[in-house]
Length: 251
Image (cartoon, rainbow, N blue to C red):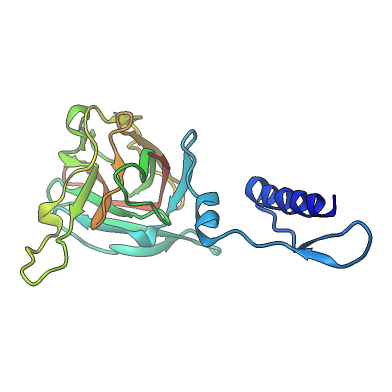
């Protein structure tokens, strides 16, 4: 009976760890105060316990420092990382152009969730992403998108770079080799919000890849999200972003 109780106690303790994440340091015997030490779960078990859900999305925040701004031409003022608002201010990535020509502001963010399992049967998939943007000085022009091509203002929203495998005769890879990461029709919530905002206030646009098409489970790949914002012709414009929220689940 004593042996049975010992085994039962160990089993219940392990179940407590698996279900609740709590780690009991010891369970006491019934007749004395000597603790029965329990073996903590293996690193692999801990990894699985922290994995992504395969039924619901997990939010991953992309900070402004993981994004870069660039413009099609006529750059001026502050471009790149800066802050907005009175103290305490908010960090943003910003693009700014003069009133020459018709310019497009591009924001490219590196999508890098904490981990994914790289095998043929597991990994993660992006279910949607919400990008936040503010507009100052002059409102934006009319934005154009092609859902079937996954583009906004002629730029692919989700791309990946397939880096070369390590070797003595590598073929260099980079942005020129980037290809669309999803397929089918890309859902785009709205690009109609183009009026100016107060500094530190932001609109939201959400992109939703066709179900199951943006699966990320291949080694040596970098996933990027790019949003292009078309300016009004011959108008000075500032745009900025505090980042994005990307929703992922296991594949």
